[in-house]
Amino acid sequence: MATDPAPKTIRFENHLNLRVMEVQFPEGYALANANDLQELRKAWMGALKSWHSPYTLLWDARDFQIDDAMRPAFEKMLSFFKGFFMRRIVGFCEEGKAPPDLPFEVIPGYEAAAKETGLGREGGLKRDLADLRSRIQIDNDFTAHVMDISFLAETNLSGAKDIDIFKSKLTNILMQWHTPYSVLINCVNLRFDAEAKEAFARLERFLKGFFCKSILGYAPVDAKETYPFRTHRSRHLAAGEVEHEGLTSGDKANCSTRKTL
Image 1 (cartoon, one colour):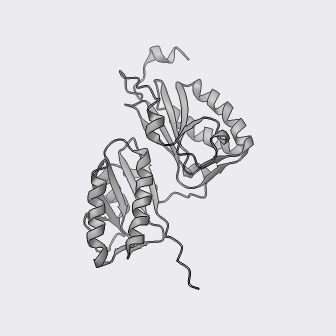
Image 2 (cartoon, one colour):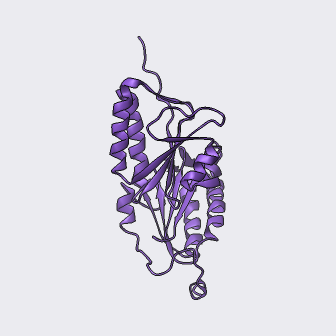
Image 3 (spheres, one colour):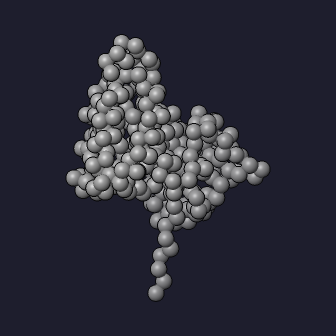
């Protein structure tokens, strides 16, 4: 009895502060039927849980193929997503190759296309997702006074060592903050074991010594009791609890604020 082939990998990465979303197809993607279109649409909708503002989409067109019969449905889907914050799409293909025929601009070379979106060198095409530190994506929204944290692949934080890696990456980001902020953690790929949950309490105390007001999670894939912070079903609900600091952008140093530490 024939079995359906395993779905191809679709990887979305959000750069919230830069207002750029990336979609990558590490194994290529052939849009040949309605199921293929549905898988792509479902993954895209999942990535949109993190968005509440306009964005530009950087599209991996290196090995993305559309059957002629599916082109109208694909273009209809793009029109649908334009109604959900998407401003434009910029595709990229291999340097030295002719751009494929897609219903949006395709630029040879990842770096050139990333620069066109404003992403520059901060893209994730070459990241090693087997490495925990590389899986951690942190975006600062200084205007809203929110630090957004997500994990680019399934992650099970196991023990104090993993929390130390998490803390190390956060410490570098903290140098950019000079006003109070809240942390929102996308839990769609995140789980904690008991030891990591206990170790996270120490990390939370550390963050609250450096302007952090609160930590909230959203889209949990495990029981809410297993997370060391409160969780909500969606980012929208979690963000609703975050107070807007209002007057000063979070990346602007304020000596009077620093004196409170």
